[in-house]
Image 1 (spheres, rainbow, N blue to C red):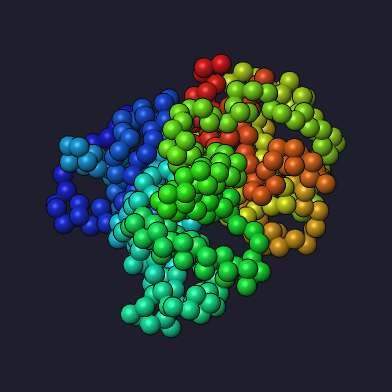
Image 2: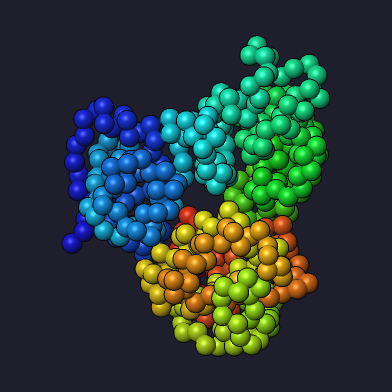
Length: 423
């Protein structure tokens, strides 16, 4: 029987592994990870004797592992796991360590990992990332003695020459984390000006939330408390399921975070859609009208129906990460996921998304029960209020929403199963 084995490592190997580790934020009840005895707060040190990078973790979910190593920081014990399937049920978040710093400095970073760090970890950890963010996000031509020149327009013009708006946003956060409110405000304004100069309109929803997160804290620190609360309200409306947004809003308002459980949770899915099964990309089967009520009626107790409202997206970055985890989750327990509806408004068969759509080829090869439903002029996404970014809903056999969390870190899947047990 597969089990954790306690072992000892020389100090130099332990120190090296801690420079590129990840932290276990959650171990979901009823999961294989819980059955193995892995605990929240442990550090994942290695996968197959290599650092647990986000890409390595995503690959290991699908391919399994030859071995894993964890550190219990309380006892100092090292626990190893032999070859076998990925221990599903782990929610991992990055730690500020050499691996994260080197990735930022080389611009070989994982945007999802950095968003997880500020929204689900401790945003003040970004103070330690200020130097590598400056190296990566600011043009090399800036004088080394002045990263903030007297002429803001000069800097925004220079920033506009670098296509790293993600890092510029996190650079602003690093200044705020270190108590430099003016520096944060400066880089926020510089980034906005640069994006306007470059004609960039769309942004990740997490980034919109982070901008408002910093705006609210800047106002709060300057004593403009009522304005800060107003901005915090805008932040929560923009990203109502972002844990960092909820935490800050509740902190400023003195509210209980449990009050902000998404209103759709545990309630019937708000739209009883009936849409044609049609994929403009020609990658998934064609069919007749798909009705949600028929889908729900065909489900058995304990099964899940997944609804992805994609709006004008298809296989953008977040959907790549979603499917990289969805495929192995489905393969772990194929009977659990009854059906998956991708609701899209894209009708251009020559869309640029096609060149980035290999992940759907993998999903089709794995036998995922996917139907692409065509919804133009995008009524479903508009009614759901998720035009700006794709949104997932996990439904039970009565059509109730069990979770709206992403699958990229497994959270949505395990939360849905946990909520299912309470209904």
